[in-house]
Image (tube, rainbow, N blue to C red; front, side, top):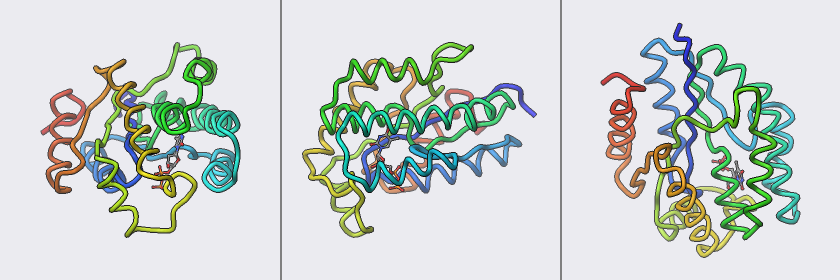
Length: 212
Ligand code: TYD
């Protein structure tokens, strides 16, 4: 078993198509003998999953929304992510803090200074400030994402937002990616699924996280 944990988060607007690639990546790491912890935010623990239900379905203001996603994140870090990394697992997390900066900060227009403060409180441990080693951003034009979503399912509080909201979310992701470019792998999610996968796989091989 490897003693070095690896923390990868996956980001993008709703409809960008993360899910199938996260599953495929879990298999690719498992085939290379790694233990994989597959998880998501908000969620990943019984408490955090309850908070997720509220965030996705109950009306609330943006400060409440931000506090709930960070409360969920705190529990998730302590119960799941930190122990998994300490065991040497590969942690694949469907969304993490960049989503808060994108959705609450960009989409809702909430104060980024407050989000940075919450980020520091929630993610600081004995190891320092915990951030993903790699963040995979599925970049997609919000108009295309909206078309994909319309065909897909009953929308939640975020999925029912207009295209302008998702443009602001995208801008929020772009700001985070620019501020921490070395952490981000940017994928063109408008391509066919196989091409997106090839780009994702190649980028992890190039960084030495997966063998070819
Ligand atoms: P998502 O990850 O897209 O799951 P599903 O595929 O089951 O819909 O849904 C989570 C939603 O929560 C998504 O619309 C983004 C939102 N979200 C925030 O607003 N802030 C956050 O910090 C996180 C992690 C997610």
